[in-house]
Amino acid sequence: MLVGAGAVGARAARQLTDTAGIDRILVVERRRTHAEVVVAAMGSRAEILEWDADSPVPEDVDAVACALPAGCEQPIASRAVEAGVPFASSGDDENDLMGLRSLTEPARRSEVAIVAGCGLAPGLADVLARHAADAFDEVDEIGIARAGTAGDACVATATRALRDRPAEMRDGIYEESRRRGHELVWFPEPIGARECERVATGLHLLSGAVPDAERITVRLARDETGARQRWLRRRDPEGSWGAVRIEVWGRRGAAREPIVYGVIERTAIAAGTVLGVTTAALAGALPGLLAPSAGVFGLGAIAQPRAFLAELSRRGVKAAIFEGVPVV
Amino acid sequence: MRALRRGLIVLGVALIAGGLMKLRGKGGVPPTSGGWRELEGPEFR
Image (cartoon, rainbow over all chains, first blue to last red; front, side):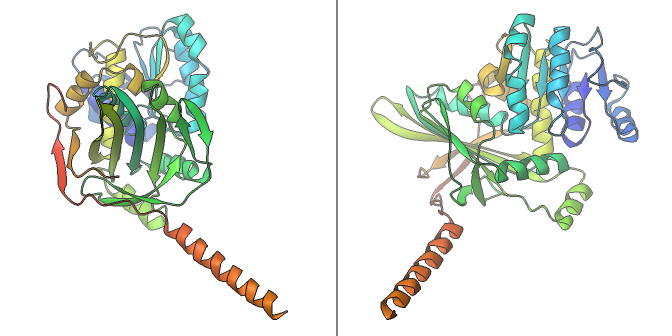
């Protein structure tokens, strides 16, 4: 069952449709005409479902995917937990992520997995951070930066994150900090250098994926939010470009060195692919991608990095490594 | 009085300079050589 068929949800629906072993996709979307367009594009396996979070999850559902604006995820996740059905969502609103984390005990009791933050960052960036961390004996520092937003709801969430107080994780402890202005971050082309600011988004999820990291920071590029940009974004059917840069410093033997990964893709396509693949894995259609667990997790904590990256690569979302002079 | 005025001017200039530096932010260091290579399986390293 896919709740929300906006920029990310529609791409997740496409990925689910393209997955062998997914028999049926129930699309829940309050904009009826929008839902009809998405379902028509997906073929005979997709159908519209009239459902809201006051109702129980239908009996034959194997997994619930949620791609809704901020503030909508927790009630749907609660219904999934009550039904004993795994849940994945692409939202990156820190309040929503906190709401999902509050379902840890119910999820454990129901023996289901709730996977929060299945987008570009949090999401794929966490998987790459964990993949890089696995290469080190000790992890000193993880720095994640994201540029790009998927749709209007995503822009609103990012704007809120940039307005809220920034934070970082130090030795597993969440510490709020003062806003320190922007910092240039070099993403893969065509994004290139963008000014980014520190945010608190997804820190807890990343800390859960790499608990022994001494320091974790997340940065976000400020998108233009004017009417012209909004118009351009809506006019482009593929959506705007987005990128993540994952810089992990650690020790191998006596040497301290960095690993820098990057991803460049249309933001909605990348986030939708990550959500679709995670949901398909939770439904049992892609075995070996996620570690079997019960509780609330970020994607970095539950995904098997190599298998997950291989599946994304097969679907066209490819990561890259920076080779050259380390960026200090 | 004059010393106080001078002191205030110096303080004002320092605040403006500090504000400009804060607004300009902390420029990162550009990668001067190297480039991005696509990760390939099975290791994705």
